[in-house]
Image 1 (cartoon, rainbow, N blue to C red):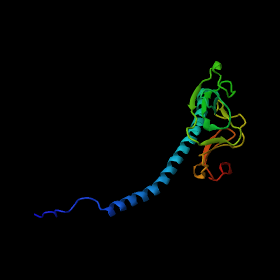
Image 2: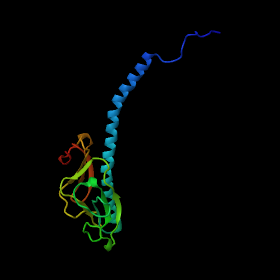
Image 3: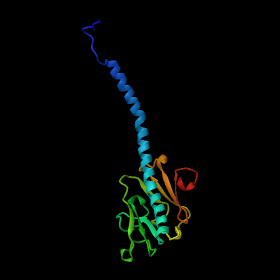
Length: 186
């Protein structure tokens, strides 16, 4: 049976502690920028997919309900407020009279609401594009400009996070990353 030395201690030396802290600092310096990229990229993807999903929903509802359905910029969640700044929020509503305005008296009702973005991201249309209306066949015959584009980017305008939502003249929405091959998202 051996006895331990009376003066031995069970702990860390100063060198071990400093080395551990240095390794943690290096890992944090590598990980924090990557985490920032991931969170910003996910936020941007979520925002653009929100509008893409609502446009696809409006299109399917127009076919299902057999009447026009409109998606428009709305900062108050009850009516179309105009402007091409989609970061202010938008609504999807049944638009029986095809006038791109919510007319409660005509039996029109809002079926989806997207509140304004809470951050500083901007979501601006390339032309004065404030609303899109799908007819009962799922097309947008309202004379959209060829490949209308809504560009979404963060306040620093970092190209890695820029996304574009493109809408064809018949109303088909698609998304793409900045510089992904077409000049519309560059």
